[in-house]
Image 1 (cartoon, one colour):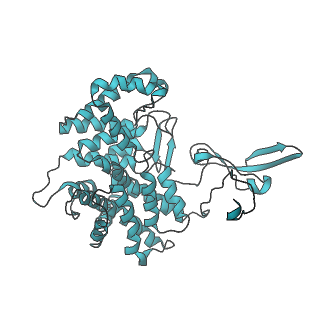
Image 2 (tube, helix red, strand yellow):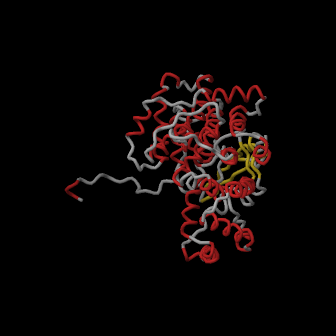
Image 3 (spheres, rainbow, N blue to C red):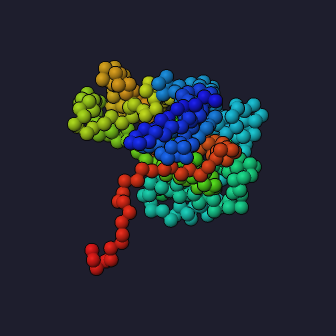
Amino acid sequence: METFEIRLSGEGENRSAALPIVHGTLGPSAVDITRLPRETGVFTYDPGFVATASCKSAITYIDGDAGVLLYRGYPIEQLARHSTFLEVAYLLMHGELPSRQQLAEFEREVAIHTMIHESLKNFLNGFHYDAHPMAMLCGVIASLSAFYHYKLDVHDPVQRKLAAIRLIAKMPTIAAACYRYSIGWPIAYPRNNLDYCTRFLHMMFEVPAEPLQLPPIAAKALDLLFILHADHEQNASTSTVRLVGSTGANPYACVAAGIAALWGPAHGGANEAVLRMLMEIGDPKNVAQAVARAKDKKSGFRLMGFGHRVYKNYDPRAAIIREMTHEVLGALGVSDPLLEVALALEEVALKDEYFIERKLYPNVDFYSGIIYKALGIPTEMFTVMFAIARTAGWVAHWLEQQTDPELKIGRPRQIYTGAASRDYVPLDQR
């Protein structure tokens, strides 16, 4: 067995341990530190878990230096070109691409679970009219466990699969309902004769008074965005789903926790931040000045939607979505000052040596916000769109975790920096 020798030396002591090295199919190996506290009396310190593998997973692989993203071994470029979101969801859940019959059955299973309980309308009525859709989405998804409390046995594979399909099916219905409630429209029922993304767009924008005429590019672009956002390894929200799942919590609670984590502006809220930045720049004439401010560390101004914590090369998703962005804008003939600002900013950043040297390329958040805006999706719904797509990854990781023979409840350690042991002082003596 290959091991990693660690030696601790200090005043009057010399402790060491030979720790096993764990290898995956691709990527760097990891040192198994589970024996470290027992053999040396110390833990590891890793803020943000940037150097810690919390689990073994066969779902997604990322090589940030090479700009590689694989779902179950398939390059994201191939899936984006040839696949659909529901086919990708099946792949993430089952590990293999479906046959034509398997895909048709999966689409049928999703379709029959798109409806939500009528009493959920009353649940939505409890929110203030201007509540953020992410707040409503988080609450409603968590409440699903109250509707399916009799089918929450996480040890039953049939119930696990049913819960996963329900979440994929109902997330768009609930997301659209949250949006329509916020603008005072009646909730729209899903039309199961439509494909996944077309069905969602109809639930978002169709009104009883007249049928909705959608340009074909709208559902095509949305399906692509959902594929690109379906999973991204052990990101903050997925790690949250797995952490909550490690306690044995039901899948609706786990996904609700993932939604809460996704809401953060450093995670799923990044594309909202991009639009706010574009509004601040205001005009293509101001792009050069904004770029100069971004280069000045003292200015406090940041260009949102550039660079990525994992990718040190061009985000492969951004390369795909950039092409779709220009296709959407061309097909829709959209004329929007903010979109003009975005395109001008993109042009400067791709040519400027400052960004090229630091590998600060436009990322998937930069382009996704532009497409969403062109499709008429309001800014406050951007993170909700992310949640719809990422549900496929969340349930895949939750399903994988439930069959992991090494599963343990998540319990990170800490370096305590508080007061040392001291005695209580009575109130009248303080």
